[in-house]
Length: 178
Image 1 (spheres, rainbow, N blue to C red):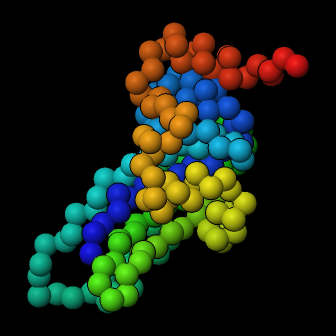
Image 2 (cartoon, rainbow, N blue to C red; image 1 turned 180 degrees about the vertical axis):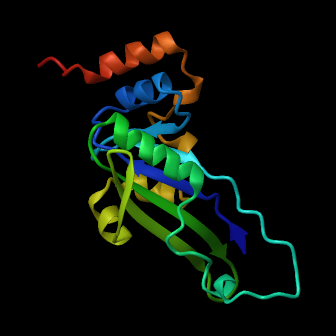
């Protein structure tokens, strides 16, 4: 069994990946940004969870996957910030998946989706419906089929100097000329 890197994907209403990367860089939000037909997407590579130290005490929550409503703090902060910056709601999708090997191989784990608006965490939504309406690149990144850095048009907002971020943001907001 191999673990697929855990990621959080924030679906935004920002049409241009350049504009989102510039906005994130100017706001000191370090994320990967990829373009999609349904809007620019911010991707956070999550730190792997450290397994608890072995003890004689056993908690049934371990069997049930811990707290199902828990959102990784790093992903929660990015989603809250982007929902404030974009003045519109965003959807956060988190994944914790493993690749099974052997007779019954495939993916197993958990995907969750949650709305955010005005910097506040909202209700959980059906992740299948969210993925069905999103661009294929979102599903590929969430399921670990492609690394975020390998997506065409990928940019890392933390690598952008402020002057370039401001220029990208302004350029991304302009409408293309006919």
